[in-house]
Length: 290
Image (cartoon, rainbow, N blue to C red; front, side, top):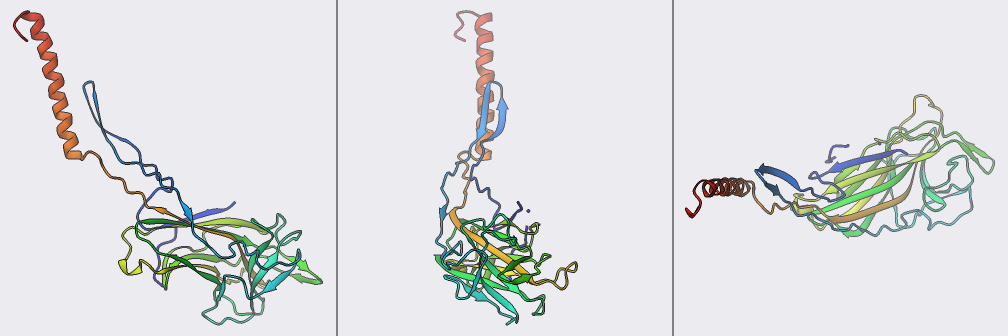
């Protein structure tokens, strides 16, 4: 699979593409000092504002159900990702209100998306959900994808107790067609019964021109790994509050090239020296015209 290298509340940030600062503030840099003159190399400061891209059902609230209950597919706006045809999986939503699964509830709204695997089901084979957006990949654009990732705790729904101890791994991908643009491959450390924020950043500056115009896809993956400390437990990873925004990539443009700056610095030094000598000669030879 073609992908960028991975780069952690918990909060994780994975970045791909040209190095850039999300704040888009480009500093003024001091190039040289000469006498009383200070010469600076100036760069244009970009102040573009990030715009959110539309994600259908980003908080998984379209499926309405009672607290401490869950529903399966279909999941509005999302499709199952199960290329390996694993068995024993269940994908849907959980209303996390007033549960021991997530004592603080969902990060956004009431529901979270669940990617559950029965303890006896296929292990170590990934699955999850994905959504292809109306938005397409644009050139010279900085994309930021944020997703809340949950490590569910054990709990009871109805009369059934679900042993969900342990941690089973996740991956968040931003894709263009079949190509992975950037991803966070399980870099968070998430305490039991809590969520962490995964952040994936991609700068499309210099990207393969053949990818421009390709639909963007968000893929949320449960790695489905057995936790060796809890080999008999069911396996589950949860997701919530999916956000994707885009902003023009920062493009620092020097207003004064280094070569020209050095020449100007030398010229200013000469002007300063000449003015100083002229004052000295005027003092020595008054009326001489210096």
